[in-house]
Length: 69
Image 1: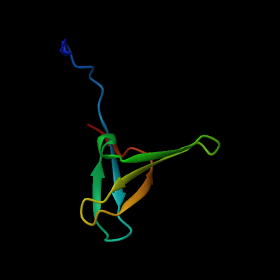
Image 2 (image 1 turned 135 degrees about the vertical axis):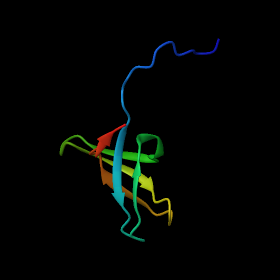
Image 3 (image 1 turned 60 degrees about the vertical axis):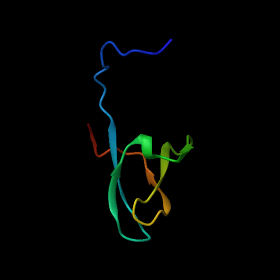
């Protein structure tokens, strides 16, 4: 049986911003692009690790969306 969407949920996707420390590229990404996460529950933050689309360097950015689409 295949899943069929009858009505979209209306939820918007969170968009994040990253400045690559290695090559200086600035880019936006969504959770679909994230390769791994680090969740520090004691300090109350989540770090998202995403590869730079220009140089491929994987660096982290705190999970704080800049907007929703």
